[in-house]
Image: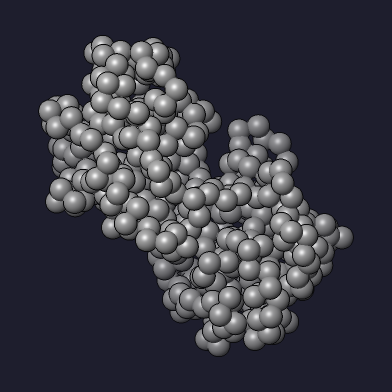
Length: 434
């Protein structure tokens, strides 16, 4: 019989984006930690910024759960690892509960996870019950309870609670005078928010629990033996330089874990601080981020620009995703239209725009299998360079993002989730003549 552990697991979901899932999940995580609970948090679907805030709230790394991009076995393995040392596991859903293919509801049903619905109660009272019952019954899913956000008063909360009938109102969060700031790709990075820990503590203080309802929530039995085999050490003995600062902050922690599992040593450096590519590097990884917010600094970073050009000229493998690719174009026009010179490894110009230019799950076919990931950007690249390949959109199968190959450079708006195909990742970071 498989070894199992009972853990309280909740998938925090809503009827749509904008209901306050991230705020509530962060408040709940911080509140439970302050009660002495060991809390692990996951984010459902592709996301970089929400996990940073949730990590700050919980004090533990935040992984990704997605039945397509991450895969069932990887999801199962992560839940098993979290259950080994957690008293509570929170999973923030993506968009609305039933949105996407696969959806948050699909994840809940796959692993038998109860759903905690977050509702924005600011413009409703008794209708909240109809909304939550519809969320439960449409799938259906197991509805553990409700957290009502932006509640105006105790009387308002009582009306919401009465409307739920057989579904408990587990907690309420009043209207907030201080909220988490946002920009075009989502929340502002936690390190940019003044006194972010104070804000998280305030949200935790404001979260009003029904302790009896919380105590009655059931636990989920997690199979602790679910594990995914480690990949072959195809990058053993190699050092990969990873850009890591406010301009290059969008990367899955699992990507770094995969590179290490492949045998690579990681050397971090900051282009924003005008640090050169580390001399011991055998390859370079430039993840996405916000280079458009730091155009002036990157344009003035002469050591960084010279070092990445030298690495490219020497045939060093360079993998640049989204913001990483933007920083390697000839120029980058920011939101104000100011044009900044970039590193110039990829012929062409990048310009920000008001409308979203790419969004959704995609995969890249490789000789080693499908490398899965996603895209999300508000800029466009104008280039005469012909794409070496295109990703494929999921689930439509339509052509997706261009993948450019210029010498040893592989660049695209596509963000890859490395654990989905470690052998393909090893090939990206290996010299073709090796």
